[in-house]
Image 1 (cartoon, rainbow over the protein chains, first blue to last red):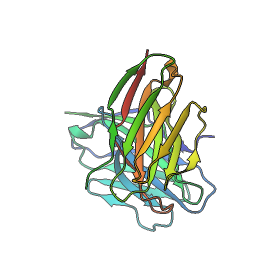
Image 2: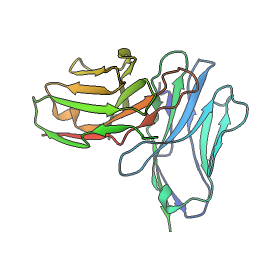
Image 3: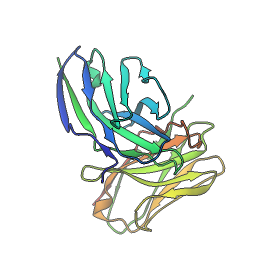
Image 4: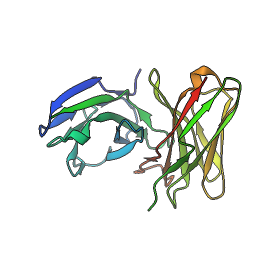
Length: 115
Length: 114
């Protein structure tokens, strides 16, 4: 079974609109971390935001926020006021804290911002 | 603070050859992880090194190996290259603490096997 599921292979969003990228995860661990990375066409993986399983508040970093619903095992990324430069692949990822330092990635969502 | 650097950025090799990729982590980071990214398989974990020791390994054949030096720089080696090894190879560094630790990635090395 997949540990990280991103159900949207591609999305088209109008510039300046907010966008939500879906991510669900599967783990039996109580302690884990969830990440979102952005990968532009250049290939570099850019860290966006982190949410720990014990964090009570949703993480926010500038225009990025993580809508964390622990009971539903959901960790959606919300980008407010999208910009053309947001066009990229977005990966949701998880690390199960006490197992190892390996990060498990989802298949990604390709986001296209339209002018 | 300088980010993660990887060299070379691009490589073209032929089947049967071997290749060595290099990764320099962020200063102070002791953990280096390697990932292979292909269109078909997505991002797959290769291995992780911490303080010169392999701490974790993914499901790749023994042709894929790595090492880490005392300055935390890491190298990855692929021997007897196959066409299917064509991929973007990403390395990531972190402090190595297991909790609340973020991996920061380098720009990647794009390997093409002909």
